[in-house]
Image (cartoon, rainbow, N blue to C red):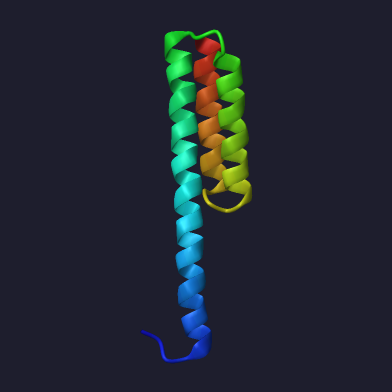
Length: 85
């Protein structure tokens, strides 16, 4: 455990950031999984699911939870799969 006050604050801040990032990533995985399921089954609401996934991916990249190139790659692959189906 740190003895310096600023380092104690950083430990608390890091725990909060880690919890937030974990929640965002978990939600991201859920939304992407739903979109991929909609694409593979050819559901009628496929476009809505893909759009929601793209928005969620963009938000995660904007907040710095995932890298912007990772976000671009995920969106690109999802769009390619959606257009193919």
